[in-house]
Image (cartoon, rainbow, N blue to C red; front, side, top):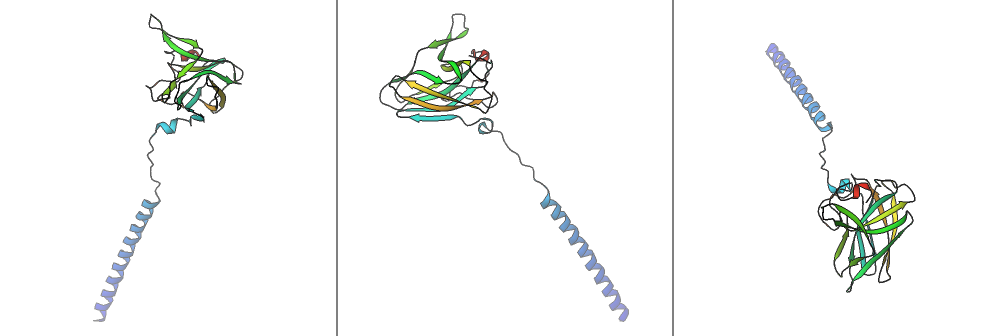
Length: 205
């Protein structure tokens, strides 16, 4: 009888040891699983690649989606934005003033008979009431000619827009590199690259 009790106790001790070992291994596995750094999958969106665009408002006129392209040439670059005339009557953008360029000009894009596009200076840009007018690559835009200093991505260009009504609107346009520039142009128009040479902007226009 005594021998039977001894054998039973030994068997019980062996079983307990085996159970303890199994629990220990399980806890180790659990610890490893919980301390493993998870992989985070992150999608790239337009917001990730695009810097914050400028916006500003003066009585009856709103500017949104404003930015300036990193100069493809040292002496000139282009600026883009969308204007909305929220008033009841037409207004006109007649001039832009800035301290970074000797000749800020309003330009539009025209297609010649050969199909080639060229930039043409205009004196004003009409702003019909309650409509968006997008100054964008391949269309009407701001040209900054005879730059007085180098412009690098991350800097800002202060501009003052002047209108036929006498209103003045000031805004700080961020300077963006091609990989920061919005994929779609201001106003929601078709995609256009900030460095696209096909529309004349590749050479500074």
